Image (cartoon, rainbow, N blue to C red; front, side, top):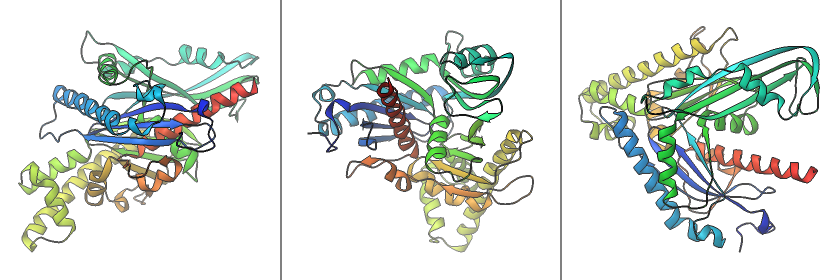
Length: 410
């Protein structure tokens, strides 16, 4: 029996969503029916162990092991809830892998083209213009091994304007002036192959699509949450913070800086002169006011130092992203699971996220999975540890629904 009564069985599509961040791996089994909300059958999150001194090779190994463990959890505890015999035997229609920093590198470029004579936009026009006008040389920084290669995750075309007017469906329209933004992302091809190999241990007859986290977050926030068309998206992972600028409904650019929740905890540990294994407990005790005056003063100063370090990186990044367009007045901030919620209160307080030009506080909305779960159907008892799982599920659902709509028109 299908989970959703009234949904046609032949319309059911099964997906695996794998979100790979610097501090955790999140995997979800998803069923999609074009006429209903996406249904998250099961989700497993595996935390990547805290490293006192970050090491790329060790981080890669622990991340891949976390991915294997999460997939195994989905197979043993999620698949049995799906009635489809195909899924029961490990056949998933498609797998989406979504990468947060530092696994990917991105660039966003604006393309403005003036044709001598008007042309009719076809389904091939924009992809051809992307190849012609968007060099990807800067993406090669993601590769550190000369035997490795760059794998282009995506080149998303957003903010299309024809003859100065924004359009959602350019196909068939005539234009002389064409402008749009292209958000490109890349990962190490070697890492991609490792990821696919790890997942393929558990599922067969599968195909993969790979994406950058900011793209998923952008579409989800713009389409579901934003009341303004210009804002920031701040994604705080364990080791890196991504800052994306959205202007006029278009993802303009994403920049990263090497400071996340684990960075703040490391700084706090060093300043407070405590062991890394004691850090989270010390943070909880400080927030609960369970310490004596002397220790409270020491820990408060350590927390203020970490908060100042993050804010310095953040404000420097904002100024680099300003590009003469001004700094947005509102922002959405998100991160990984309960650790982010705990750390944010102390090290990244929203009332101290300000415009470095004016000192004015930004209007910051903290995105949690609890606040976003209503956009999906989630099986009772299933815990979601990162908003990115929900945004990815919504993106997949939208893609399937649009594809079905096009077939219906034909």
